[in-house]
Image 1 (spheres, rainbow, N blue to C red):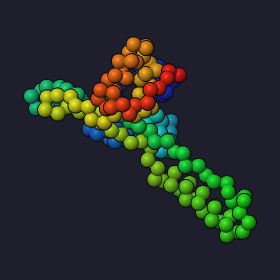
Image 2: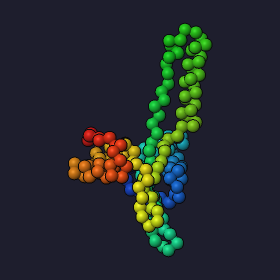
Image 3: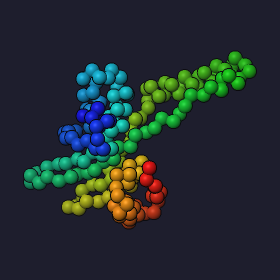
Length: 174
């Protein structure tokens, strides 16, 4: 499913029974590890996060009524913390070692503690009504607009302004 989502089409639809969004990521990551396609947890998780834009979580209440409990957006966290090569400009061994230690610290942070994603509910069901909670990320807004005709994009922009204010950047189609 993850491989298909990476190359096959504009969207991939599937079902899963995870109770929370982090549980969904973990379960999909572990499934990828079990297939043998990946041996590193971070790489497998990165692949999952790269294709999982939204989770639409359905529930069945005690009356047997099914409804969408929440829509959760997955927002990949880009790692822009690059290594420095300033050690070349250092005149002393102490300075070179300090720059090396800075890079080593960055490396170990990337390998051990790096968060791959954040998530937010953009819509929730409360008191028999759907409530918009958090604004969609700029990246998902841009991608959604790129798949709309001009009329739909204009209506989508109005929807965003009406519900989250005029903080949205008007994005031209790419």
